[in-house]
Amino acid sequence: MKDKNYILLVVAHALIGLLIYTFPAFSKIYAILIVFVGFYFVIKNRNINNEVLFVSAYIVGSEVFLRMTGGNILYEFSKYSIMIFMVLGMYYSGFSKNAIPFWIYLILLLPGIIVATETLNLKSDLRNALSFNISGPACLGISAIYAYNRKIKFSQLNTILLSMGLPILATTVYLIFYTPELKTILVSTGSNIETSGGFGPNQVATVLGLGMFVFFSRLILESKSKLIFVINLIILFNISYRGLVTFSRGGMITGLFMILILIFFLYVNTRNEGKYRLNLFLLFFVLGFAFTWIYTSNQTGGLIDKRYANQDATGRVKESQFTGREEIWDNEIASFKDHPVFGIGVGKGLEVREQETGGLIIASHNELTRTISEHGTLGIIALMIVFTTPMFLYLDNKQNIYIFCFLVFWILTINHAAMRIAAPAFVYSFSLLKVYMDE
Image 1 (cartoon, rainbow, N blue to C red):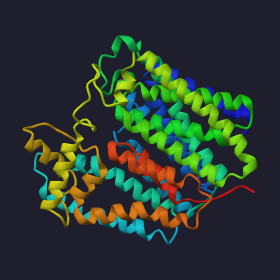
Image 2 (cartoon, one colour):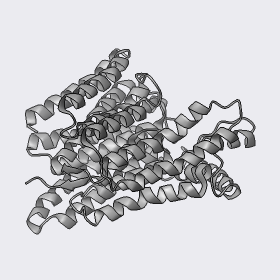
Image 3 (tube, rainbow, N blue to C red):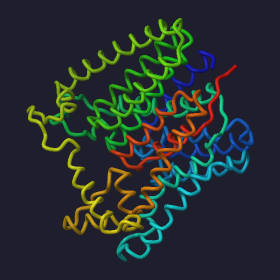
Image 4 (cartoon, rainbow, N blue to C red):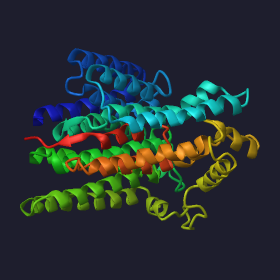
């Protein structure tokens, strides 16, 4: 991509963030445009160049932004859209006959849905319960079937990641204008909704951590000139800073793990003559990250240091490392022990906790324990399919240097944010792509 085109894309998305902050109603127009332009883009080209991956990546990057600004027509709009685009892509380009593991994965989810129709109370809205809990796994299964062993150039994959990163840049610009002066609103080390655009800090930090990885990869691999390097460094700094001040740790720690894994694979696959340049890039990154942390610490009055040390504002260590989520895990494991084969049914875990807590509605943050609880042993088999398949494919897919970055994003994200957003489901599917380097 030419420097001029890249700069235009960056500026355009910065302006989108500013425009939606100034005129919130534009968020709905933005959402509609994404879908209609996406359909036009795919149908016109008949998915010759895997256009559905570019469009779906953009939807993933914009999902939290649209939720934050009231742009989504339906709450699960992004997951449904991605599934429709994946099916459209399969219509034009087919899919691998070897994608059988993920057909099995989808079939294994069905008994939990059937059990739910029998176990959920009449007062429960079955459609909403299924939509909230099963749309993420369904999105993963359909995306995986499309992506399984699909050949794609490394340069294309980087452009797809950019498609995901650009709306995250727009989100970051929106947060810059939305967030009040930090020292006037920070009184504790808990996740902060005011620094998260008035939305859930967990989801916001998740996409910002993903954006951090995207622009780090561009900093290292796609900065062909000093100007683009500086632009990517500035974007990386701003996304990292905005992610840190949400005070939600999961997404940022996940992004950092992805970066460390990428660094490892780059070192392993870089020849000696290229390691000097790589070391230079890494020096800039380490200095930039250190500066970002010091700046954030200063702006938050040291509260960010206490947050990551699991301390409250007074410096006392908190009793729980995971903000009380251990109790939900225990509850879900207990449900599995009581119903080990087919589980308690999709969405039933929410009802169980509501009954046990006297009316409190506590949704699961952990997709692993939720799946085990609500799908039983069949759920464990489904999870094993998802976890092990990329590892087997890697044996014949060494050129996909991102493969374990994507797998780690999926497994760490679903451990703290379940599948509330489409990102872990769709990004996981990238680990199944057959990547080859450009000639």
